[in-house]
Each structure stands twice: as structure tokens, then as C-alpha cells.
Length: 153
Image (cartoon, rainbow, N blue to C red; front, side, top):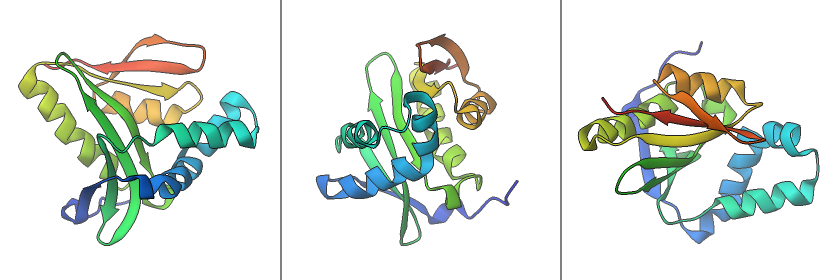
């Protein structure tokens, strides 16, 4: 396990349409192998998946210092919070950045007394384990994904 970093250097900025290529590259580097394991190596299909995933509304670029290192997308509904995306470049994974960002969301969940929902590829065991350590549990599944939920207490 890598040492934790100074999370005070982790900042968010709103995503824009201009971030589409960066988002595509983050998704490819962070999730590409799981997309290939799930859907095969159809590059055109993977490009379409990456293109559809960036929705600037409620999407934030994760920065460490001046370097852009990932993205997070969260929808806030009246009765739940949905984490649509949390992707961090592999060189910046396992430093506590994802956990730091999720703790703020989980605190919001507790304060509002609403659950947090998300999904992970079934083949992405590291992501499933990460979220389970934060208190998420598998609440359902599809052919390709585990649906996970955190219940506010």
C-alpha cells in the first residue's frame, strides 16, 4: 500500500466540454482493461462508451496541485446520491484520494439521511473492494455490473 498524500492538495474544478478528451483518457487508463474484459476489445465501442460518460453537469475534474488526475461525477436526487463516476489515473491511485473524496459524499449522505448508490463492473474487484471498505454493500446486479449502496445511519 502506498502512503497517503496531503489531501489538502486535492482540489476539484467543474468539468467543461473542453475536458472531453482528458475524461476519455482517464477512463481509458483507469477502466480500459475492465471495459475490454466485459465487452471485448472493440475500440469503436469503447470510444463510444467513453464519449457518452462525460456529462459536464455535476462532473468535476480532480486535481492534485496543478496536475489533473481524474474525475468525479455525482448526481444529487431528493432521496439518494448517485456517484456516476470516480476515476483516478493509475499513478495516483491507492494514495487515499478516492477515499478522501468519498468521505465528503458519505458525510452528506449521513447529514441528509439518504443512501449513496453506484455501480462497478463485476470484473473490477479492486473497485468493489474499495467501496466495500467504505461501507457499501452489493444491493443488486446486472449482467455486467454490481449495484452498490451505502445506507446512511
